[in-house]
Length: 90
Image 1 (tube, rainbow, N blue to C red):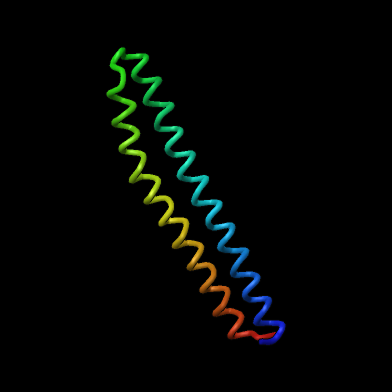
Image 2: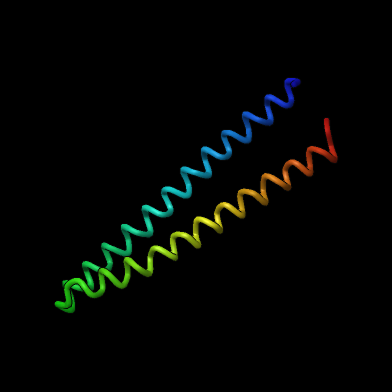
């Protein structure tokens, strides 16, 4: 295993760490925003906890979809970068 192989593994590991961080932050932000908005709407319309539950359950698939979108884009970028390195090894 040469230096370039070690460098590639380090880059891949760092990319995966960043990806996991992004995915976690996306899920957290979407869920917190949906709960906050649901609580505000319930307070405004005096319908506690209908809007909170609806937005929470709607936020879960939204966060999963956003996580998949980010993961696909990151994987596409990684694949593109590796293809460019194979074409131009210098």
